[in-house]
Image (cartoon, rainbow, N blue to C red; front, side, top):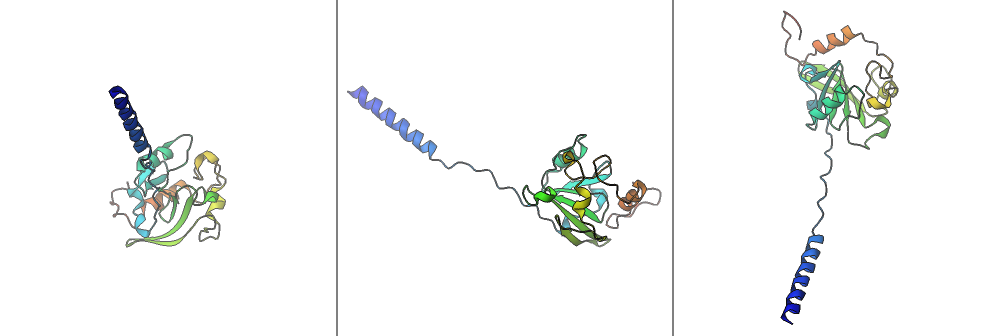
Amino acid sequence: MTQRINLWRVMRFAALFALAACSQPEKKPEPAKDVVVTEASFRCIREMTPVRGLFVDNLLGNLAATVAVAQSPTGKAYPPGTLIQVIPTVAMVKHQRGRSPETNDWEFIDLDVTADGTKIFGRGFADMKMRTGVTCISCHQPAKADWDLICEQNHGCLPIPLTQAMIRDRQNTDPRCPQIAAAGRP
């Protein structure tokens, strides 16, 4: 009889323990951080990480993942927070999935830059137009799917009306950057 009572107590304790374990709240993953873009998000283009002709950063602190995608020879989707610039006055920022499916969640930003800093002249998603009146997405849409709307040579986009020398000149004369030594450019 004592063994039955002890067995009953053990079974009851095990059932209560199992019930308590099952009733613990399930740990939910942390919600994705919003990508917040302000004028302070932009700095001297040459202080960003260069990859081929692009300069990249990540506003959420995930620079390693952004650089890995930028260096990929086959292309991939960029992580949220990615900031890409080719010239100081134009930027693309990747937002969380679902923000703008039409632009693969990229926001296009037109900037005014001076030695005093950066001002956002215009910004938007599918409806964003550059000062020329052309929407950004109309140029980026032809990029092959693997390249996440990033236009580089052989990615499917039409060429931009700037030569490589003109692009390097704009990158090297960003007015937000410290003065370039007279002996040469970086």
